[in-house]
Figure 1 (cartoon, helix red, strand yellow):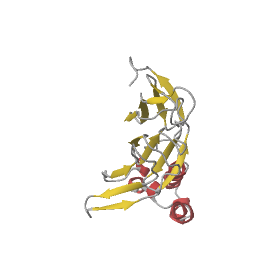
Figure 2 (cartoon, rainbow, N blue to C red; figure 1 turned 135 degrees about the vertical axis):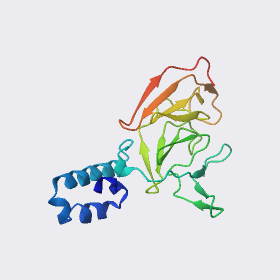
Figure 3 (cartoon, rainbow, N blue to C red; figure 1 turned 120 degrees about the vertical axis):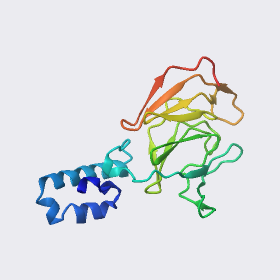
Length: 203
C-alpha cells in the first residue's frame, strides 16, 4: 500500500522528520526502502537535479496550467498563472533576470526559459528553470550559443532549442544579428547541452 503513496510530493521536512522516523517504517525493510527512494526523489526535485519519473513523485492527476511570461518589446520579469476555473490571473515568482525575446518550454512540472535579450539588450545563453510545484526559480547550465527569437520544444524528456538570432559583433542593441542554424539538446538529468544536427538554413 505504501508504494501507491506519492511520498516525494510531501513537504521535505515532514517526509524526513516524521515519515522516515516512524517506527512502523523503520522496522520494516521494504517500507524503509520505499521511503528512502522517496527521499532521494525529493532531494532531486529540490536540487533541480534532472527529471524525476518515479511513481512516488508523480501527481495522480495530470494538471493543465497556462503561464504568461515574456514578450518582444519590453524587458519583463513577470510570470502569471491563468486560473481558468476562477477566471483570474495570479502573479507568481518573478523571473530573476529580466529579459525579452526568449523561449519557454515545459518539461514535466518545470518551465525552462532559454536565452533572449538581457538587461543590457545583450544576447544571453542563460537558462532559468521555474519549478511549478515549489514555485521557485533556479539556474541550469547555459546554452552553448547565445540566442534570441528562437524556438524550443520537449521531446523524450529533453529540451531542444532551434534557430533564432545572435549578435554578429558585440552585444549592443545596434549590433547586427545573424540567423542561426544551430540546434541544441539539453538533458535535465545530466544538466548538459549538446549540439545536434543543424537546420539547413538559419531561421
